[in-house]
Length: 334
Image (cartoon, rainbow, N blue to C red):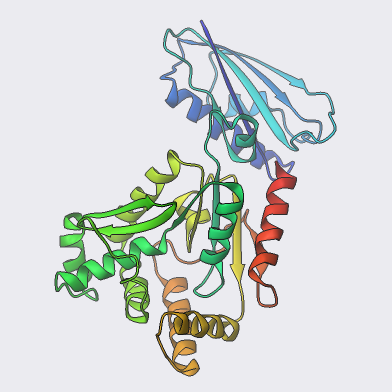
């Protein structure tokens, strides 16, 4: 017999939210430990006092866990404890080492067992990459700029003379692109065929090309697999356009940064000037607005603010202010 531990949190004290999170947690525990009706003996539930609308044990029954005994209990109210938390212990007749599962904000309870993932989404020029890099340094975790992976696909298309406006051509070649993410001297390097192309993909041409290829399902499937694999084994912060909604829907912390198109265009002009790229403001603004339209209207995994993400308007905020606000929210949740 082995005891398997787990925990999750809910956003709201509502029956449907509780049902969904209990089912999700038990399903992951069941799959991770190869459990079935015969070897699941007993499940003990406990929940914090701010969960009143539905019994977690009843949620388990409705999720299809009929054969094992269930019991629910109430946790004592401890100051500064994690809010809206459901903990479980599964007694199972297995001989293998148990795999404990902690999801959503409950992942912070067992940092020895889980990686911490932070999702930061937002349109071009909202400051998400710069803010994410700063937060990664302060928390001593890795920063994955997911946009770089799509820029790499666009760059690979250009290198191999593939028309990136032709989805079928891209689909036929995507598996041939040897794209990797490596960390060299604590900095992300985007590699194509073992060559560092990190600087070469930071051009206006690659920015618009990346927006085009990222709309293709074949590209997103391939790059999302790369991104998820990275996040599963590293505590990290990921920024992009669909991290919280698609890439890492179970990320413990989700944020959506935004700003007016004019503000974002001014930021991009200033950024380009540091790279000796001189583009008129009107051209940059037009590119920003075009990319917003492309990213928001694509059929597969569009730019969207996840339902459980915290939205922050950065129009009148400096980078340090945004980072401080995000860090404060993370610390309060933990």
